[in-house]
Length: 242
Figure 1 (cartoon, rainbow, N blue to C red):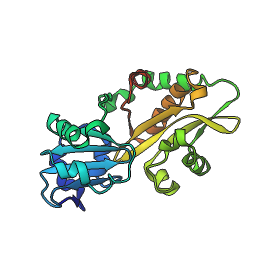
Figure 2: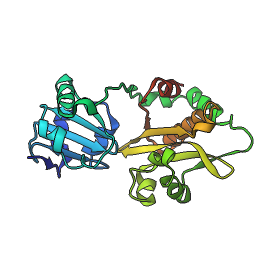
Figure 3: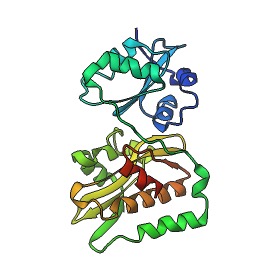
Figure 4: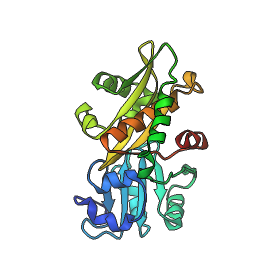
């Protein structure tokens, strides 16, 4: 039997050492949910937040197949803690599974404390060409982005703007009043956010994502938050490293 854990921290030992902010969000009870084979002392657990779930502890077939929150989804990124979980996921879902590689970037809070680094980020934000506007995510933009498929993930994990204002942060570049690029928090945790960044297809390769990313990092520094930024592909990795 699978249990939603009312005290998510009870599963913390199974996820110990996993430098993944979405797992932290779940364990801290900030966002997401944690399920386990036992509600108090699990030996198998899954942290679920948005399109991502993370498996830790002893591989558990029922957790992979039937955990609440998995039903009705067309797409889910399942991240195994080890090869035991990876094999179980493939055994359970067969041809419905496609392996892919994401790039985890080392968490280094101290790198944003130097004046030279902050100045370099500020310089990037000043490269915005005439005709574009850079704005912080406000309530009107929040509501507008929820209705646009390509940028919905900037705000999709937040129930409303009040929740976003407390736990999230974002910047958007507008062209003729329309969002064309942005960087926002996919989720938040105690002390930071996970960066979600994208540009509308017809505005890519213009440096807009770099401007948004730099601005978001600067705003995080002002709030004392860490901007965690893992990458789903090599192009995103290059942008994050820049």
